[in-house]
Amino acid sequence: MENKAENKAVFDAESAKEVVKVLRDSFVTGKTKSYRWRVTQLKAMLKMLDENEPQIVAALRDDLSKPEFESSLYEILMLKNSCRLALKEMNHWMMPEKAKTSLTTFPSSAEIASEPLGVVLVISAWNYPFLLSLDPVVGAISAGNAIVLKPSEMAPASSSLLAKLVADYLDSSCIKVVEGAVPETSALLEQKWDKILYTGNGRVARIVMAAAAKHLIPVVLELGGKSPVIVDSDINLKVATRRIIVGKWGCNNGQACISPDYIITTKDYATKLVDSFKCELERFYGKDPLESKDLSRIVNSNHFDRLSKLMDEEKVSSKIVHGGQRNEKNLQIAPTIFLDVPVNSLIMKEEIFGPLLPIITVDKVEQSFDLIHSSGGKPLAAYLFTNNKKLKRKFVETVSAGGLVVNDTTVHLAIHSLPFGGVGESGMGSYHGKFSFDAFSHKKAVLYRGFAGDAFLRYPPYTPGKLTLLQALLSGSIVGIIRALLRWFWA
Picture 1 (cartoon, rainbow, N blue to C red):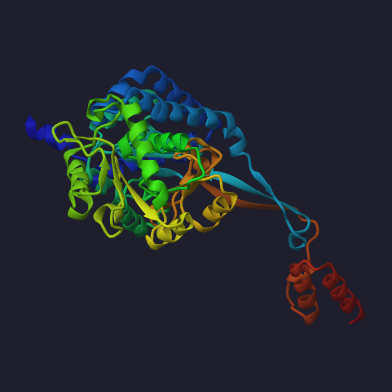
Picture 2 (tube, one colour):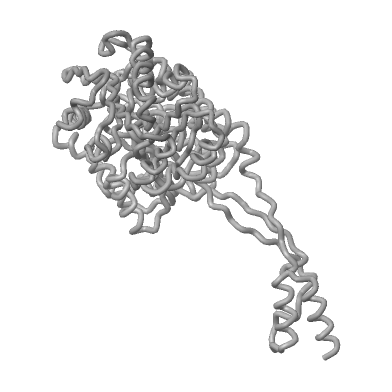
């Protein structure tokens, strides 16, 4: 009996192949292409979120000790907003876009038609296991695709609940969840998909991209990087500090891809900034932040050990100016600030993805840009706090990142009219709002012509006169066309 149960539980390449076949058979019927089906699924997802919020909050608490405040706002409410936006705008998104034509094809009309790609794979991350799983699914549904969702095994309670809820509320002939770890993900990556969206780290992204290349599968990669925060001195320090805190420790205790990774400020301003952090952190999380119910824990012991290694490096441990408390048993690390860590230290070489925040100092704030450029990477986000218009302009013109925010952190994620995605090693492609619809759609060029206006010039036998006139027509030059016609008639 045990062997039978084990065999039944195995999800291998053949199992993955069968899942794809079932979904492709459903897609071929045209079921997912209908506006009604898309609306029904999005309304079902809204109902799922409404009716199961306590269970979702509990799963996130089990996986990450995530505060209910963060779970309700940053996972559930943001998902609801994505569904509502798609329901409101989807009919408009689906309509063909008119395109201009030219004299070359006169008379004619043209349009760009959005068609679903087919069967897509979404591989999500553990840090926001509901938002990062279902937000791409909203885009894939609104674009009319069949979908396989692979949640992260590192958030097991959320993964299990996702599998149950999706099966209970959504159309299982077109939308499926596959749970598991590396073997299951590997089996899925062997299959032919019409697109893959992966959220996670660069190491796994390379594996995903290599697997996709075998079948020429397009990918969207949502990764991360070291997102810098430049802090000028001519600011409201209290407001700036609070906004950095909520973007760092108020977002899953620093375990977020757009979380501030390090701060750059001037030597003269650094002490004021540290003092402000100390004051506001105590106000938010108390004298002993390990007792606070408003901070998530570290996801697992591997990540706890990784962060501890960053903290304990000899040239870094002496640079702690606030925090540093740890509880290995409960996987807790307090908000920790470092001042003037060496730029060649481990903490400055890799994405921190945790509650540690180094502060680097420069003589002049303008030197921050050189420091960011010298890091060699293009982060998923970059932040600037200043009232200086020239500095704002230079920031936008010179810093290459997935997204920029001036005088706040992380809030661009909530703006559906902005694309969310990386550049370089922080990712490729983007989604959110209509960008999600576009990410899972093929933009099909369509040209309509009648039988009138048939140009004999394009047909053999070819002559110099025909060539001259066609060249003028294709160039779009009215003067050239007139000259070519005159030559033609006088020839």
